[in-house]
Image (cartoon, rainbow, N blue to C red; front, side, top):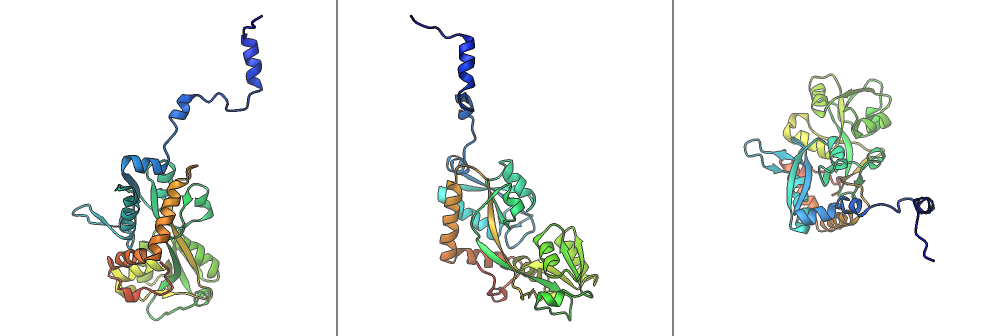
Length: 281
């Protein structure tokens, strides 16, 4: 005798099937393409660009053209797929959100903090940058201990790794946070603070643009160096990250990234001789 299925029997059978068994083909077909597939198919690499941020980004206001170390790196990475770079204006903070919302494929010059790593993926470092400071005339600190004194006034931009380093290594100083690096510089120029904690790449660019703020002081005891990486989307398909990591390793090895960083620093008048040996490309 042939048994015909009933609704009650089908419902009972469904109850013992593993979760997700009834995912339809339409859902599978609408799943988003991975970054590698999207770049390979569209021949476009979408990157976040941040105006006024040498050595990584500089925009020609007359032509709208972008230059800088990150722009050249992006062109090199896009070249793996014979793709073009599409520039999406953003900020360093918002680029994390842009990755999460699939607005961009890659963000440059990000420090891989644990908090950021909860939201996005990171490549291997393309640069390891030491930290130091800009200081008022007549004050030439060489160690964090020179800053870590009750009578020393220190500025940093709020929410940055500059703040993290200042609070960790100079907690005895008078610490003041400002909204931006430009506000920190104004505080230093006006004599409201004695020093501004700042990473080497940004500090060198700042001095190159305004030599009266120099020299840039590397600080040791301890030497504080933190990696900069490319931010990417966190996704099951890891091929895009693997290709970019291979690009980083290869181009660090043959000196291309160092050349690109030095050329980016030169946009603000920094000479190769001013780049400290501790700045590892």
